[in-house]
Amino acid sequence: MNKGPIGVFDSGYGGLTVLKEIVDQLPQYDYLYLGDNARAPYGTRSFETVYQYTLQCVQWFFSQGCSLVILACNTASAKALRTIQQNDLAKMGADKRVLGVIRPTTEIIGSFSKTNNVGILGTSGTVQSNSYPIEIAKFYPQIKVYQQACPMWVPLIENNEYQSAGADYFVKKDIDKLLSQSPGIDTILLACTHYPLLIEKIKQFAPQGMQVLSQGKIVADSLQEYLSRHPEMEAKCSKNGQISFFTTDSTEDFDSHATNFYGKEIKSTHLSL
Ligand code: DGL
Image (tube, protein in one colour):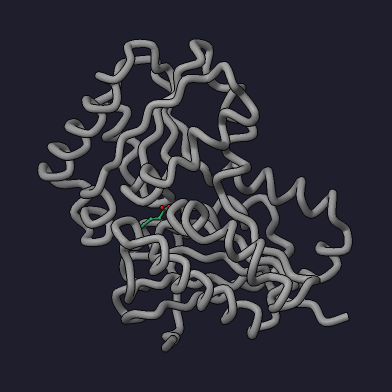
């Protein structure tokens, strides 16, 4: 049987916050990371565009021998995953799988909120898709979901301005807008894989005791569980503990920014799509 790495995809750097947790938890597997930095951000793009870009990247992962690809990007998970799973996977190889980050998060969100009032912070695309309210309602119909799009946050992070006074202004503004929707919100989900870089600022502008959840650990736990429930997929994942990084934009920029997300030095390779 041909074995290959597990593919981890994001529009840019955000998926590295997820990859880091996955590798900490499952270091034995090989991973292939692709950041589509040249076309990021995805958050403000149309459904059709996000779908076309994501599909193209998924096809690349498959061409590299991956059987399992994780869309570590909420925008791609919200706007492209279902169509890829329902329409494209069968044509690309019935033995291949693409998983997202929304389902694993919504499955367990109910165990965090005591008030059953959950706030979602995400890109405009993720919020407009309504994926979180729809998915949470399937598992926890009693939970009220409040959403706030934070269109400035990804550009601030991608441009390394996330520790600036400008970031303070936009973080406070969007947190205030979210919390003004309900005084009962006790849990805020960072439904964008870039946002963990802002977690300290978010906690600073949220009331004391607010739970602020990022997805990395949740997705890592879910992948571990998936691999144990699907031994036929697990058997297709190679295990040499190797990680390769690809970006569709400049490797110099990627390598210098990526450390902030991944916590370690990275040496990437350029990919032209
Ligand atoms: N990191 C991506 C997400 O989780 C979004 C970044 C973007 O807008 O490209 O939604």
